[in-house]
Image 1 (cartoon, helix red, strand yellow):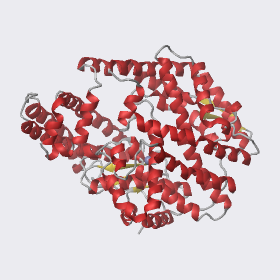
Image 2 (image 1 turned 60 degrees about the vertical axis):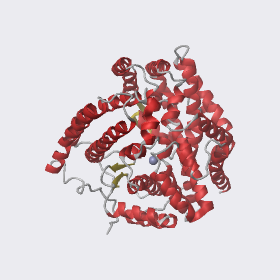
Image 3 (image 1 turned 90 degrees about the horizontal axis):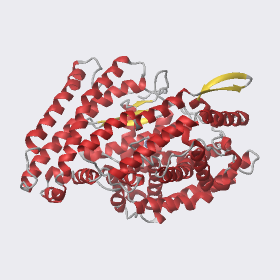
Amino acid sequence: MISDQPTRWDLTNIFPSLESEEFKKAFSDTSLLIDDLMECFQTKLAPLAVDEDKTVLNKALAEYVDQLNETITHAGKVANYIYSFISTDSYNKLATRLLSEFEQITVRLENQDVTFKNWLSGLKTRVDEIISVGGVVEEHAFALKEIVHFSQFLMSQAEEELASELNLSGASGWEKLQGVVTSQLSVEIEIDGETKKLPAPALINLRSHPVAEVRKKGYEKEMQAWKSVEEPLAAALNGIKGTVITLNKRRGRKDAIESAIDMARIDRETLDAMLSAMLDSFPVFRRYFRAKAKRFGQEKLPWWNLFAPVGKSETKFTFREARDFILENFLNFSPDLADFAARAFDNHWIDAEQREGKMGGAFCMDIPGTGESRILSNFDGSLDQVSTLAHELGHGFHNDCMEKANRTQLQQRTPMTMAETASIMCETIVSNASLKQAKNADEELSILEGMLNGDSQVIVDIYSRYLFEKEVFERRAKSELSAEEFCDIMERAQKATYGDGLDESYLHKYMWTWKPHYYSAHLSFYNFPYAFGLMFGTGLYAIYQERGESFIPEYIDLLSSTGLGSAADLAQRFGIDIRQKSFWEGSLKVVEQRVKRYEEI
Ligand SMILES: [Zn+2]
């Protein structure tokens, strides 16, 4: 029986402990498996000529793919087991040391991966023919073709090696500098007559402080603080974007967006349709911003009221009540989903207790090869935390659907665009149920505020980030940009998206300084896949509302297949054309209903 108190997760069925013989053996077996994989490559694949018979190539490739799946399943299980200790107890020295040792071991796996990809790209003109022979290779057709596709955008092996070595002292150094500068920045601020020294993340959190004056003061301090470090951060951003532009040119990429689109497994048509629907939805969001401003006696919203709390929810849940509430509402959707969630709660797959040394936020991870997942959250009894649990259980259910369909690790690799499908669906189920059961107008308002604030960040703010990054890339290709220019681009991006929803005299021109996403050399345009995820999940929910039960089997089949095709092909199964704007408009209609209600209360 589940207790009233938030549980800790249990992984003793995976391994008894970090000190156990079973775990030690699995840890050292990882090396042996990597040895075997390398040997399989050297003896079976490497000696084959490009014009070798297709059946011979197919057979050898099948052996390698099987062995690769076995190795990454094993390594993933060991790594996630270790991570379960680190994420719940950052003081655990043994786990920290083991993870670092494990990373040393798996570097060889990454190198082998590069070798294999190079080999496969040498066969690019014959891949279809080899796949057509069938078997394991055919079952992995999508993953193999994707490797070949990405390989056309590689420089020579020597150039790639030099680029990755130089990255350590270049782009990656700039990225670290941004992390160090922003995390070590601290500011003195007076709150309730007391002067406190706050680190930047705590200062940012003042945005949702219940007292208006504190939020305003926090905003002003934030602006001064970012100004004081704008020069090193502008240098870092110039360094990183410059590197990406140079490498993209040498790799034959049209622009930085092209590789981001590829990684998201979508195409430009889809991105354009989605962005265009987002753009059209801004007037609706601006209504929400203005309605919110009105509650504070303002006409337009100053930045420091953007995250201000509105309404009040007094409903509190014990952990058991949260479980019952989630299960009841999941059951209305699908018994399979409810069964999965019951399994997760009752078998202690969830670490929900708040405690010292445990990481904040929430996540879900699968434990490869076991058919199980684990969920971390910080449960405080609020409605908000109940939807977080529902969200993470959605990720777990997604994993479960893939496991039940016997997908291999390579077949489970899901891009960011599709990874949020089940989690958004589950979160929507629970949020809608709590809206229906709201005890009074104040509680309804607070739930709606939570939903709309989240939606507006994902739709409106992410669009402004997209505009910012696009212009930065275009202009950086010609010359470096000054801190002032970065601020100017950001302000214009915010005006173009928030429009008359925000007070123009209080925008946030320094958003580029502290968002780490802009400082990744590996992943440009980090944010739009989240907008895709939210709208795709919401769009599917709208279809579910129309079709009812008949939707479920196809939906489960879709979840089990998110590693097997492009987003457009997978959506096509529902008759959805994501290259058409109308699909995205349908999702955004749901938001409009929420705004209407928000204005009424
Ligand atoms: Zn998620």
